[in-house]
Image (cartoon, rainbow, N blue to C red; front, side):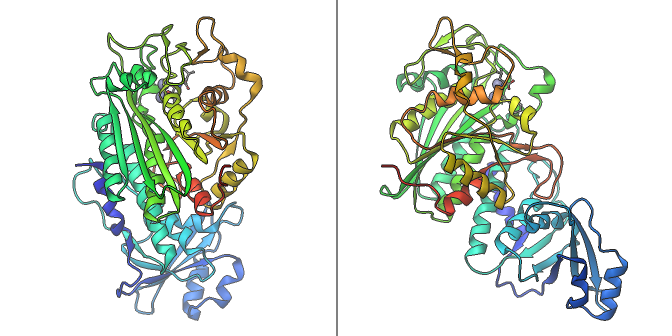
Length: 474
Ligand code: BES
Ligand code: ZN
Ligand code: ZN
């Protein structure tokens, strides 16, 4: 079963806007005085008050009964101290509420964001679970464009999460290509793929070197969509389907989660779906460098010197720094047509987590306005990023004694910055370049999803592109 099939499951947690089924109202109480003017009977008000009005850890919900003991509505109290948009707390509700159909009764809510939060919180990865699972709470979609956009966002994220959650045994470079191809077919996009030894013939030597030790051949997946005259956006994703570390093998604890090392690829497909499904006026190109970093007699080695698409030679200081190698060839290709914006998404370094933790991916860009716009767009939809510098002063740490550069820096400092600097060396013409060092994973359940895969920054970038913040290049 292809992992994309599970995205049809959105109907399990959302109902059409024109559904005739009666829906239970959800009220969001913003301040303690809300109850006085609430659309509830005196008995319901005192029941709600008796349950307590203080939220802790995000949200508290109170089920309000009808006089004959059925469910009349749900009052949600928000944590006063919490920061960010109140709509995001709605993500808790699908797992808290009894099975049934609900609707958002609060007029002041941003319905699109609240619906997205609901759908993100409701996601479950059930591919390998027997049985149907328990019934679930469904939310009636709002009317109009907000519903279509919310659905496109959710389909994108669910697709991306399914891909990341799928174990490497069932998702190699071929299956990643299959998912990209299914997406391309759905949106009438063009897709080509350069596979195995063809990568050498077509000058992608580093993607080939990283992936050649796997029996599942590496590939460069190239998807294009949209009108040729529109602004050109190129999204580049790291698609390492499993990262053993290569000959510089990872310890077991570090290898355990490495099925998610293709989260960058899943994220660009998720974002691509949002863009194509909502028909943004863009010329979209998605490049996925897909490979498995395996160990075999023909694996690339520490000390090897690799040629690259750009012509620069790269000395391998560590075979576990493989993501930047495959991305460098893909970025060099993207850069050749000088798009208006190019962005790379990659689970590139453990150091990014040391710096900012799992929930806040570093963003790198030399364009101050673009970086500020992305950060603001991300915050506004609960998909935050934090800017770190392309620090020129650390460029020399990538020096190599024998080649043009090394794939690792000498010291153990600023690992996420130096990885970003490595990538920037392969982007020579594109004016607006942004790179995201994502984690792709939620270590514990939160409002916006269960423990497991996350397509970090896909929603942030969609919000940016939707607002049309990307200027055209001269
Ligand atoms: N895929 C890893 C980075 C990673 C590890 C991301 C854990 C998220 C969670 C990447 O290929 C890698 O192994 N990077 C090395 C680079 C080092 C050898 C310079 C790292 O971060 O340790
Ligand atoms: Zn690695
Ligand atoms: Zn990796």
